[in-house]
Length: 356
Image (cartoon, rainbow, N blue to C red):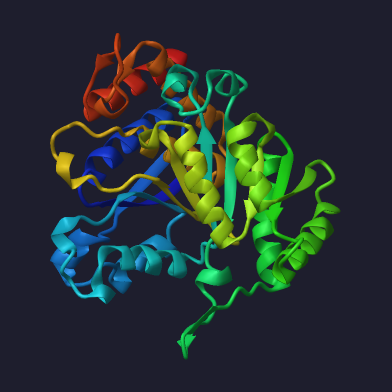
């Protein structure tokens, strides 16, 4: 199979971590007989330096015309003083809008080898943490009308049936590829928008009889994520709730450098990136952890390219790497062996080859 991947190396540690993810993808391509073509795209601070624009239209078009996009990280202190409309992060917002990605999907997974790093009690961690939050990305209160008049501030929370249905389908389709359990998170005991959300989700459930749908109020969900995260497979929710819950979920894993994410729209073309930032303080020092980016590439294979076996192979290789006691500086612990960014990639590739 031939796939065209737009590659945004970005700023700070971005080029280092992306390079290792591409090497892993090349190893997968060789093992399974695929061909991945890479097109470099300038976005973020590097694009500001080169073009005076965080995402020129020509660079955006490369992404839109690709089969999917792999992103490292953008931004850094160097560009803090540029005008607000030219900040590196504006390039990311323009990219999401241009690609039409309205669903942010962030896994929360505890690797058994790193379970001691979780802030949760060990007996909770031992039950397992492996779920994904599907967050509506371009609607809701963040995108509604905002105004302040006469000492009164108003923020509009608005969702249409169509917006709920399209994110709901992402939730059901994601659950279908995992454990076939979907929890719809809302606040239907208070909010009209949540009552509509619940109605649409239950109507959609009739089209997915193989997926078990449940409902949960957002405040209860926030408690359940720390009380019994093992109960969850896929959660789907609106923008603000998803923003808060996904940050909470990332903390219970204890390893931000390990967490990938994806942003999807109506088609199969997605945007894949680790959840961490550009970490300019360690850029170029071979200290970064590339695993979040490598696992983002695995998500690309699973959710955009329909290559579950290949995605499983990457995740198995990462687990085997951790079993052997190798650690980058961010997850280093007593008794482990520290490696740099490049060696981390090399060791994971070695595990991939051993599996083959």
